[in-house]
Length: 315
Figure 1 (tube, rainbow, N blue to C red):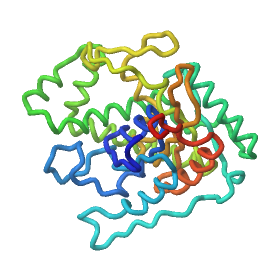
Figure 2 (figure 1 turned 60 degrees about the vertical axis):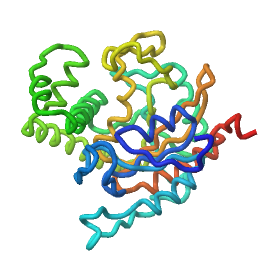
Figure 3 (figure 1 turned 30 degrees about the horizontal axis):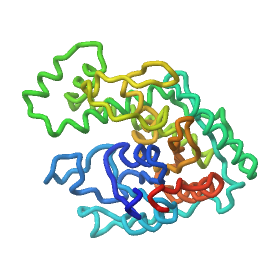
């Protein structure tokens, strides 16, 4: 990102996580408002829209995200003859009028001390700027439930590249391991997908009810700062250290689940540094199709926290 003014990314967390790791800004759009034909997943040459995955921009300034979204947003090839995308204006122009909640940590998927410190400092900064932040408000679901539904549907969405024989083999794996969980859900039958989709819709409804009382939810992007590249073990055999505790590698992708599975927009901006000197970002989650509310608030957060760290290569 040091050499590029704008990047376009896709997949299920490949906007938010790179932004968090790199100290830049990124916007995961509401599902379905940016045409995604040709993205991976699914397989090259397919016409279907992959579940959960979206296409969105990364940049160094939130204003560039807004500019990019104005270009990218629109109906897909099937709906273009009759549909138009007209996103609503931000809920409030004044940040002090926004009703903000913050979900900074959770016993099911704890964040490390640096992440908690940086996000707590953000809450204090916002409060000092006149923004009301409720750190106890939650939607009507647990983080554990949202992550489970997210991961089940995510692995099912990635199944298109596997031949039937391999999927049959995956479905038969009954092992109580992270890889066994991945295999069984990659090979999920359609009736099971429908059941998990209904669980997803329940989460969407609970988010909708939550956003009757709040305009923004602040959340971690990941439970820690950027990890070192490590391919010494197969992906689902790896562990990561979070505050000195070995956690499953998949715990890195838990906090992106509640907004991702429910199709909500989420803007990531850097808000501080870890003790190792690495960026830590925050997710700014807004109601479905209210991307402009998330982006509007992101500009305030970016201004208060100093924006993107300046790359050394910039001189």
